[in-house]
Image (cartoon, rainbow, N blue to C red):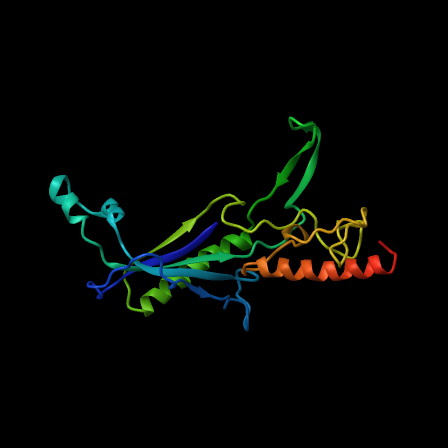
Length: 226
C-alpha cells in the first residue's frame, strides 16, 4: 500500500540525464509530530525524485502511426513524483502461526499468515496523497495527479515481526537482548524481533541490535552462563 502524487515541471527542456543521478529525495515524517491528526496515529514519509518523461508517456497522448511514434522519440517534459510510505500499527490480529495440520514437501508445518490493513493505515494513505499534491502545487508543478496503490500487505516492505522482543515469555519469543526465551543460545537480530519499523528504513537498527546482542552473548559466555 502506498500513495502520493506526481506533476510536470516546466522549463529545462535542454537538460537530459545520463546514467544514474544521486537526486532522490527523502522527506521525514511530519504528521503527528507536534500536533495529533484527528484521523490517524503515527505517520508516513516520502521518497521521490525528478526525471524526464520517456516514451511511456504515449499511454496518455492522442495519436497513431508514424508521426505518433516519431513524437515519442524526443524526451518529454520533466516530472517530479512523491511516493509516500507509512507505518502499519502493530496489532495482535496481524500474526503468523504454524499450521497444526498442513506441512510442506519436507514435513515442516506451513505458515498461517493473518494480516490486513486497518482504518488507520487507510486514513494515512489518503492523507499522504493529498499532502503530496499540495507540495507539488506549491512548487509550481502542473498536471498534478494523485495515486493510491491499494496492494495487499507484503509488497514494498521490510519484513517485521513473528519473533517479537518482550519482557514476558508468554507474549514474546525473545527477551530484551534478542535472546530466545526457550533456546538460550539462539539470538534473532533481524526484523523478526520488531513489530513495526515506523517509516524509516530499519536496516541500521538491525545492525545495532546485532552488535548489542553479540556484546551481551560474549559477556554471557565469559561468565559461564551460556
